[in-house]
Image 1 (cartoon, helix red, strand yellow):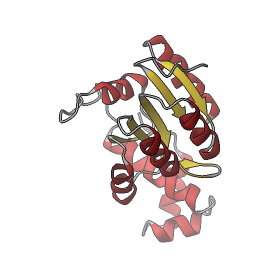
Image 2 (tube, helix red, strand yellow; image 1 turned 180 degrees about the vertical axis):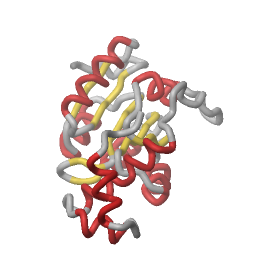
Image 3 (cartoon, one colour; image 1 turned 30 degrees about the vertical axis):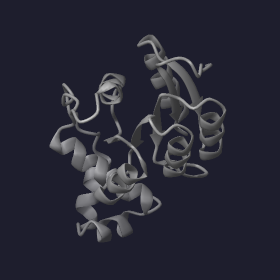
Length: 180
């Protein structure tokens, strides 16, 4: 996936989730972007320095560090780059940190290529349209519980304690499928 410095729709995608990165890269190429993809902070910074893109989509948590380091490198090499930070571990503090580092927006996973494109192409000072099918409140709750569960190394007791929830209630929630 090559990138051209002269291309006004050059896009860098940095995400360590290979299936997601591949699907997003394909979808964005189909929308006319010249995509370069990386799976780590080091790879993202190297790609950004080699060919500073017009746009970037950067995962917040990568295997070798924080995506905010990639955002900072992009801002140094291309101050006008429009950057969207994606994460499955969203909270207000990281959203503020992403915007302070130079991201134009912060999106929680799962999200789709249409919404990402809308955010990337929104002109300065305007807001993108809300997604056609945002996550339901039940799905947001389920995602939050899953995130805390993963952060607690899949320890049910510790997750229940941190969520101020009864252990058996948490076990029932974890046993169910994700809501739509």
